[in-house]
Length: 218
Image (cartoon, rainbow, N blue to C red; front, side, top):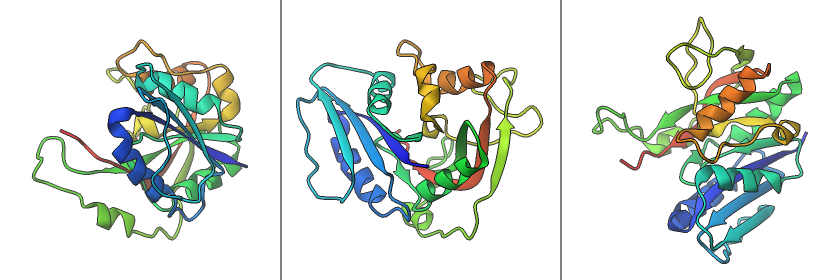
């Protein structure tokens, strides 16, 4: 199966995007396509040749993250669409494990993640270098375990086990995007997208390996 990345971006986040592109170029398995939707910018050319198959869409219009996600994903011609925020980074084995997970005939998958610093105690830091230098011997995969709308939570999970995952880093079969898109009017479109999948009979699988690095900006 082929895998494409869908990345939303705005002009003010271009420097973060360059870091992500360099990060992607070091994946153990390179994504087949990478679609980037950039708003508030009339054109964009990466500062370096990262050796990636890039599809770049720009507009001078102001768009939110959900709109850019929908645009980026619509340009992909792959079996799997994996979403990634432009200011976050990927573990070197992320693409490899996500592709491997879809061999199990699943609709979508989410995974655990590392965070740059603790939300409550900002002096507690989790260094990026340590995250990138971890090599996983095996993927820890659980099929279709995120299958419920849990009381008191906007995003779906499991009624018995609370799985930790990043809503914005979901990967799904491309065919599902014919029916499901990101709500461009909601404050939390990532959560609503995943919730919509579960509410309509789909399930998300889970990879417990930490495959992305969430860089908190506050």
